[in-house]
Length: 123
Image (tube, rainbow, N blue to C red; front, side, top):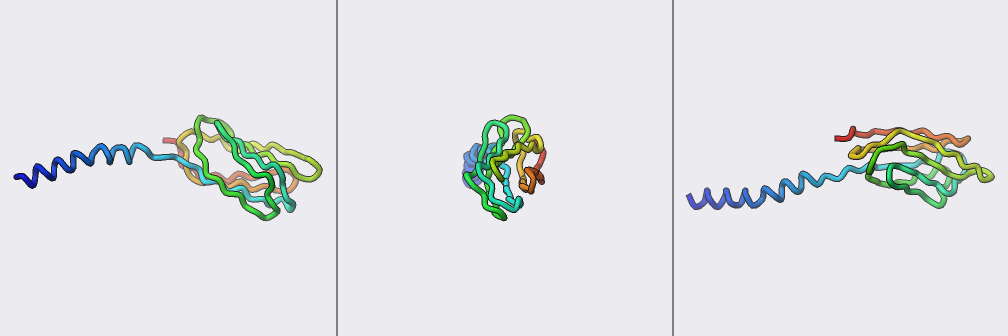
């Protein structure tokens, strides 16, 4: 009898910790920006709802990895400078809060980019 009471009290004490662990899931998007332009790019900036990230330079053939969390809803945009100060702004898919997964952004010649999202819908 005492053993059952001790077991129940122990389980009861762990319940709040379990609920906190389950409720605190953090939604992130793992992003890779691939430079396949054939030349180095400068001032790479990726804007997403509520924030941005980037790199000063990204060599030809190089990849840049970044992990972020979306707050709000809106399109993702990529901007970079190449060949004599040309700076395209390319809009990608719309992201929503609580999405998670992977996003590949491939920078292509001529100021183009391809977005390959593998994202779970927002919950």
